[in-house]
Image 1 (tube, rainbow, N blue to C red):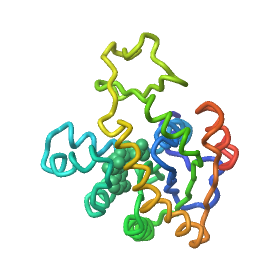
Image 2 (cartoon, helix red, strand yellow):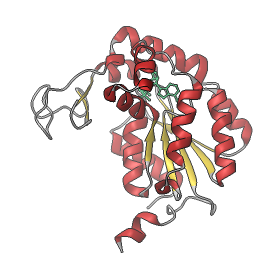
Image 3 (cartoon, rainbow, N blue to C red):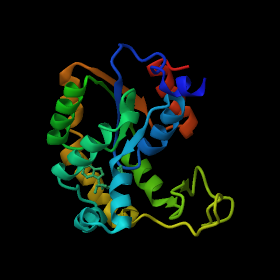
Length: 234
Ligand code: ADP
């Protein structure tokens, strides 16, 4: 039955507790793309703090107004804001069987808060680190286009739209994300180096599952095959 299919325990993931799969890597490493592919295979929600924040900006609510300038400048939103968003989201019923985190945690206080939440709710964590070199990342981000209507991501080099700057799905004119401009990309990479990369030592020190995946070479599908292999997914 279809409902059983989406609710089953992910194949091959060791252990019996539901998993919080953390996709880790610098901006432009392909976390969002891999998270979407994992979601299709595992049938568990994809939680992207970046997408959640952009939705709040688009809605123009108080939180959106508070984070807009910070995000446009390529800086990190305060920990308590994202911690609350994630805590609320993972309390929803569709997360009971596990979920995929994309872009969270990004600082040590966020990781500590996530540990607390996962412990309280009985999840184990599993980290997938997408390793990429910065020259690739900068080129990838600079070539990134997004549909403002349906959110589909395109890459001018690896996944271009059929017609230049037009969404294949709905014909809307594609845009560059505000924080994908080159001056801002540097700021985002700097924030990653200073605040986020140290989390790798934190997770290595915890002795849990930490997988390293080459995210530089190959198509998104080839990179996904590596993840599948590591997680022993069918
Ligand atoms: P990328 O990984 O390509 O930088 P995201 O969509 O994950 O893109 O993040 C975009 C922006 O959203 C970040 O630069 C930051 O301003 C904000 N953001 C997303 N997740 C977090 C987080 N966990 N903590 C703080 N800020 C965040």
